[in-house]
Length: 319
Ligand code: FAD
Image (cartoon, rainbow, N blue to C red):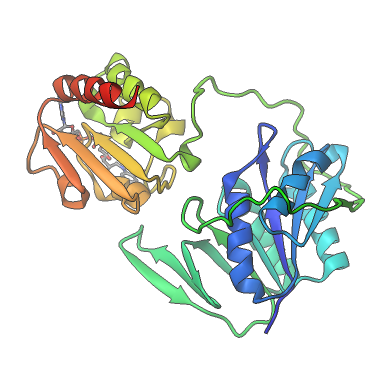
């Protein structure tokens, strides 16, 4: 049965997020030949939205309103619901990002839809999602006619970009009112570098780095590989780095192609955030550290000797 499927795309720092393209990939499976309509909301997003055609959207809608300049729950919920009223979708796909996690249950209630969150794989209408902090996976389906699916970034393959696919971006005017929160300004934290939740390479440090300065060799390795810095809660609690870098059950959940776990023990709460990484390299001086149980490659030794050596070797190969 074909389903009209809406993709709620997301932009960050003036660029579409990869998970928006992955959402189109997911939508193709759910739509089963039905129309795929990509929706981008913001204050001025028309030009940016055009790219969504190249990833396979049949139609693209820009929802522009000054009140949508920054994300607010009320504003985006109202905007999306007004688009739903016009489009009457059978299914909606969006990223399992901070925004997706916040807005999707509210939309599901209003749409009277089944909600599948944090989906990592899709086969027909069977959705696979991690449970028990990633220790197991469950596969779910629904008899409901309406559904909303949030997909975990970096798991579902985005369609190949095809620049020849293009079209006219439609606009939908929305009426946003009674906002309980107004965002006046967003001040970015000076963490810089690559966005952790979408990075292909992550170099994560734990309490073993011993100080904020101890992250320096890890930063050099991350920079060489175009990767992002991450951390265990141990490192954050010890004030070696900012909590925005924390990976795990109570931090960010990541699935990069390559994850370096350096000077961190591999506590179950940390594994919950990274054990689905494609290749895990652990560096730890304790051969019994639990991180080695999930690692594809393990190096036993002092990180302050190994990381600079590794960076130097990789530099010889890569640069
Ligand atoms: P440690 O366990 O102290 O490990 C440090 C490691 O560094 C050791 O294995 C040691 O052998 C190694 N080491 C030391 N020196 C060197 C060296 N020179 N070279 C190489 N290796 C060295 N933790 C998270 O990470 N993320 C979470 O989201 C999270 N959520 C939690 C939620 C709850 C409810 C609770 C109770 C805990 C949570 N934790 C979380 C904390 C978690 O249980 C661990 O305490 C924490 O992950 C430990 O951090 P660590 O591995 O850096 O430190």
